[in-house]
Amino acid sequence: SNVLCDSAFQYHFVSDEGYHVTAIIIDGVSYAADSVYTFVNVHSDHTISALFDRNSYTVEVTVEGNGTVLPDTTNQVLYGDSLVLTFVADDCSEVDSIWVDGMYVGSTTNYTLQQISQNMNVRVVLKERSYLIVAHAAVGGTISPDDSTEVICGQDITYNMSPEAGYQLTAIVVDGDTLPANSTYAFTDVRATHTIEALFERNAYVVTTEIVGNGTASV
Image 1 (cartoon, rainbow, N blue to C red):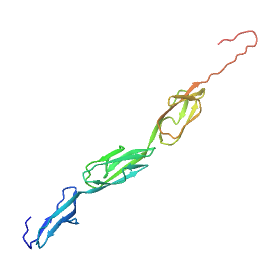
Image 2 (tube, rainbow, N blue to C red; image 1 turned 30 degrees about the vertical axis):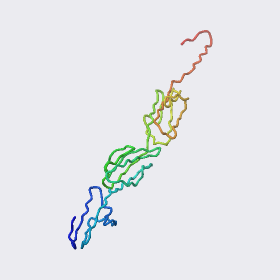
Image 3 (cartoon, rainbow, N blue to C red; image 1 turned 60 degrees about the vertical axis):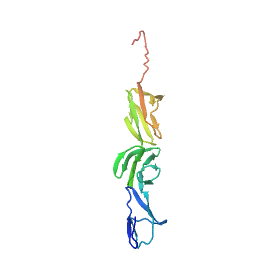
Image 4 (cartoon, helix red, strand yellow; image 1 turned 180 degrees about the vertical axis):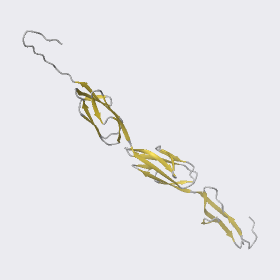
């Protein structure tokens, strides 16, 4: 720009969306960022330039439960960039829900924040993993607990098998494998689904007949 001697001339620096002024270079000397600069009482030629950079935003991640998040709980991301969050639950936990700035967005183990343009808060809720154990008793007895039972990962559960009158326990079938008869069976440190079935059969009795005198007996 041509400026008359002894005149003043003002420059305004306007950054694009997602950018900010980082410095002003005047006649080769760097000055602190400002939105305005005024040349006063101009008596010589000058140069002026403005430097801009992308804004940096903070993504804070809160993990509720047993686990961690990658890359970190506090992340700096440049305007327009994306951030991939990976939620690593402990052995007996899993992702229950993910919330971004108070809005539910799913329950996956990975979530991508795209084209970030503001500070953001992410909350991931982890819950204890549980497994289903299905129990069944054949005719002639009972198993307790019966039907389906949810067991928290890492816990134990014991089953009791009882024959009805006139029956006996003959075997226990656990996950398809037949085991010898026992009145109790325990699943310890549960980390998978299981099935258990108690098998019973009717008791067999021996009837001895003794004949005194002349005659026979028949059935």
